[in-house]
Amino acid sequence: MILAELARIPSVGCEFSGLLLHSGIISTDQLADSSPQRLYSQLKRLHVKTLQRVDLCPTPDQISLWIQQARSLQSSRNRRTQAL
Image (cartoon, rainbow, N blue to C red; front, side, top):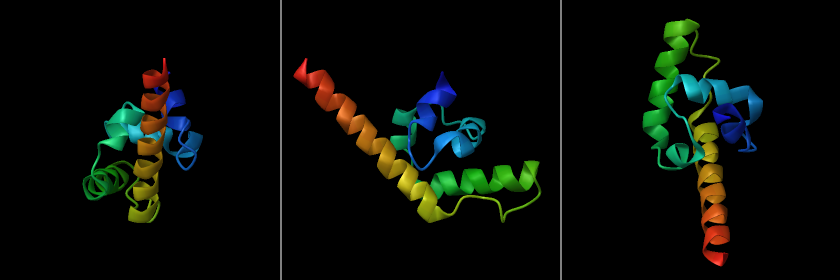
């Protein structure tokens, strides 16, 4: 369920939803509230620790896009809730 929610974010998809989950992000709302710089640091540490490779880490620009798209989903969900 959590992976599916994160995978709804177009630029995250199935490719990065597990990575976000392992870094402690468990919802689109939590991702929307994240700091791009802080999340990048977390993901970079995770990549170095588990894969011993920093080159596979998503770029700061990718992470900013994830957060932007999560905020957009959050905003759309809030508008639908208010309409009811």
